[in-house]
Image 1 (cartoon, one colour):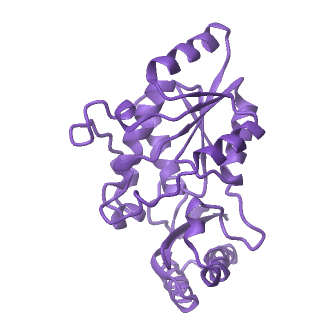
Image 2 (cartoon, rainbow, N blue to C red):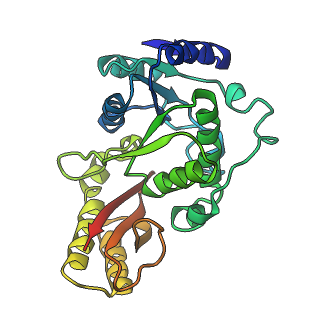
Image 3 (spheres, rainbow, N blue to C red):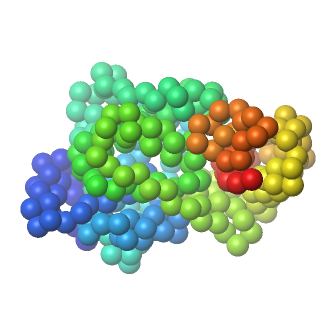
Length: 282
């Protein structure tokens, strides 16, 4: 596996692959890799000849007071994991490579259709930061395929709309959420949990699954189901931001006849902000 940090070196290597006719996939990450990330790389390998993994902790998607400075950076361990799954190239750019004119003067990309609700209302500007950095990474790598995890469901829809709206020649593929044995979605932020909080954390998925089961059984009182989910999370020890039932493709508030739904939640547990979702097909 080759490790590259400079844009010109990256373009040179990608040019060699393209000249050979190779199809290129990309898996953007912020590092601190776990099995969920590695599953995305395995998916990428099914769709391309070469897989580029990026590790870049993007400062523009962290609001003031969030965990940018403390976000776990484990580059040496990440490299070993990437070698085991036979990633072809690791791109680890400096901030100056991604934002050559500085953060304050950087061009911003916004996807308002999916960015201002749910997590967007609790983390203002977060999805602008996500859309902006993904656009920059796509411009550098120009992948044929990019794989993102379904756990970050709202982010996935932001990126899909971004690629479609800007006519980017990249196929955005969703990788299913990988979970621990007790149902907790794998996340880099799980390591913020204390031992006691870790025992509580699986309740997030249980609440979403219970809500999904109620929907599948015919319950269409969305507001009541959302309120019940909030109360159950609070009773378990969470401080929830939201529990919400939405249309799976548009994230709009669903109608009673909609059959493609998603139940989403974000909740704080100690120092960790956990997110999860469950798709529901009626």
